[in-house]
Amino acid sequence: DEQDVAAAGGQVPPLILLCHSRGGLVARAALKGLGGAGVPHLRAVITLCTPHRGSYVPRLADAYNTTLSTSVDFGALGRSLPGPLGMLLAGRIDQLLDQLANQVRLAMLHSFGTLAQGPGFDELDPASATLQALASGEAPLPGVRYVGFGGSNPTFVRYYLAEAGRVWPVPAAVASPFLVGQLARAPGVSAQFGGLEELSQGDSAVALSSSPWPAPFGAPHQVFPLNHMQALIDPALQQAVLGILRE
Image 1 (cartoon, helix red, strand yellow):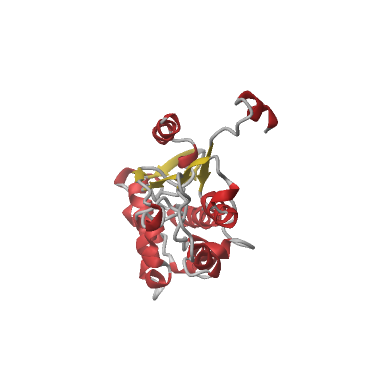
Image 2 (cartoon, one colour):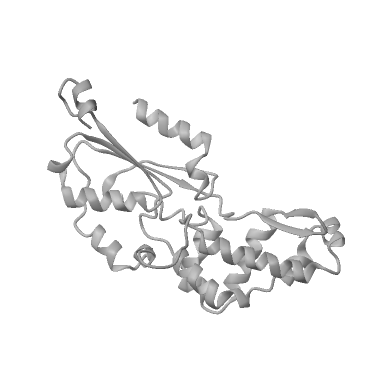
């Protein structure tokens, strides 16, 4: 603003863009439209868990909400729970697992921090016309540094079973691989949704192969063991970003 310019002796201070999730795509589109002449004071663009190559999760969330949820047998999860937990919940497990299935459905719909359905989310599809147009003719701006961070914790929700005033967490090491495995069993699902990489290797919303910047930007990329929303609060990631800002 005007005060910042005045404090800098009339010079426009350096600008660094720090973008989370699809905010990185918005920044890319804006910079492509402006060109180098539009932001001469821009020094760096840092993206956190941005789906640079798109994400299948909005499409998957819609399919799960409408059809795939009935294909997942949560009863099989009950049979795989650790012995003491399974024994404590014996006789009520089926009803409780139905509640757990509903938790998964809601979590899928909120995988990007808001409902992963509706206007705009179709743009995140890896094959969308929006992403193709963005990549066409796009090039890094001279003098601008590009850096990307991604997450490798695909656990997108904490699973709990509650009964008679007691609450038991379902181990993520059990629940998350179970869900991916059950989804992959449905005919054609793995191929239709990019191998379910977002839920098996990525940050629950963005696949590891999607969070790096496109090759022409020559951007270094670092992976942290966090999920999509943890990128906003993770202390280790914050320190990594601060290190870049101080350079």
